[in-house]
Image (cartoon, rainbow, N blue to C red; front, side, top):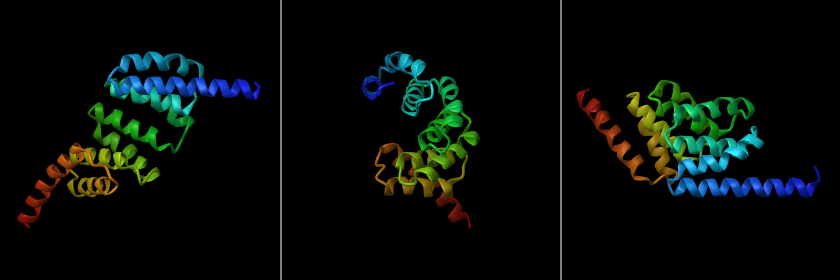
Amino acid sequence: PRSGEVRARAVGVLAGVRRANDAMLDGRHREALEILAPLHARLPEDLAVLQMVAKAHLAALQYDEALAVLEPARKLHPDQFKLELFLGLALDGKKQPQRALPHLLRACELSPGYGPAHSAAGETLTKLRRFAEAEAALVQALEMGEEDLRTRLLLGQVCAPLDQIARAR
């Protein structure tokens, strides 16, 4: 294809991804998936499209569908922190924190400055009752500017058992 065609295709993909993202931000997950379906069919290996499709499924709490996109995407695009993060979130959403944790920790390793990955790892570590590690991950998320209320509440949940353990010694 000529460079003009490639550029036009890239602009079209970007516009579709933006429309889908806007729909997701408005809570219209089904609409986002409808926007992304033709892009995904046309560009089944495109990282940005794969990430948006997975993100839309996660936002719609469609964990099996997210995993169906993420598992092959990870083989195509190894060492992509968002794919690892989304895999961890999907598995955690399916109530499989033990399987989710390695993906979340890998996301933290691949992008150590991304606070939401540390927050997600902290939440999963809390579910696994690994409180000291959870505290470290949540504190790190807060130090990176992850100032959402959920991270602060999780940190409070983690600190209570740690205080009890320290007093018991």
